[in-house]
Length: 409
Image 1 (tube, rainbow, N blue to C red):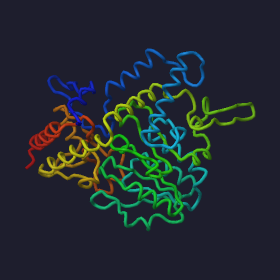
Image 2 (cartoon, rainbow, N blue to C red):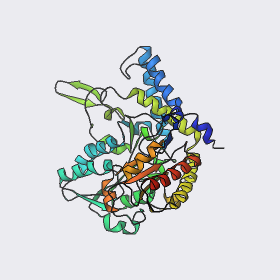
Image 3 (cartoon, one colour):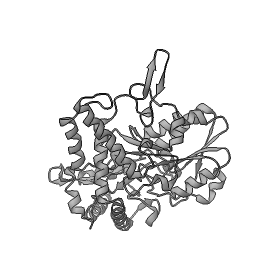
Image 4 (cartoon, helix red, strand yellow):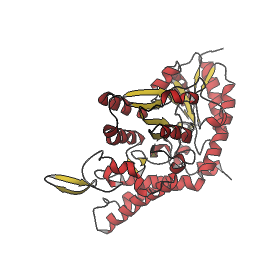
């Protein structure tokens, strides 16, 4: 049984009062998730008992730190079903993962006249690195359109994937519309024209099972801080034959095997892409987060979020003047972005904050998508392992209150 009340006990911050007598209702997990006590303690334990640099010392603390740092990589590889642990690259966040691929693969493989295909659903992290690369190389960016319900215009793929396409980079789950995209279908379409496929799993990996072998994607990136782990670390997965041919993204300690005054020899995978003292405590924390989510079961997490999201969709749909962005049913992940007629999203978020309810308001780092929808901003409530139906009721009541404050009919 999925016991949400027991799970809530794992998150100390959920006992917080954001104002005197006003308990926290945290509905902003799509921006950054809260951390269970096991993650907090794992990082504390590292700093208290075995902090040292990794890969460089023969003393006991360094050996312990190295063991835990690399053990986390093994957990992550299992979590996404990577064939080899060497295909798991530690990066600062998903954004760095896209930049690494754009720099290390893109600059060697994208040229004048080539095309890079994205979709209209993308986060800025999966747009701007490719814009920079395309401008530098004389390539063209194209965007697979969305339909008015926030789903991809799959039937138009043939118009956008051509022999000139070198890369199709797309989100697995939109952070605005909530749209869950058909990853394997899109990957297969890319491969059918000889293009590579990169997947933005920042909003997928925290919420449902990820299997990179079943996806057959060439690259995949996600962030720790959205999946119960610490900030400052993320993961890039890549197929080995691609990673091996790519030059280092950054240079310095740990990414080298040998250095002379005349040059250097890069290290093996994965350390070739991990220059400098790495994010050791963060890796330990991410490993603990993987353990925690695995103990819940990602299928169970997804089922819980599906139930909460369906409940929220029905409850919010009854509010006068609301416009909910994105598709219905199984095509939607665990978030709802919306507007309320007569209210700016920032006003909504401020009024809800006084009720202790944390949501996000703005363009959510997806300005092009908002422009496509004819909006400058939306309010977004996002759900996670600890969200309850009662919190959805509080959200609904607070939105009715917001309308009354502004005397909306």
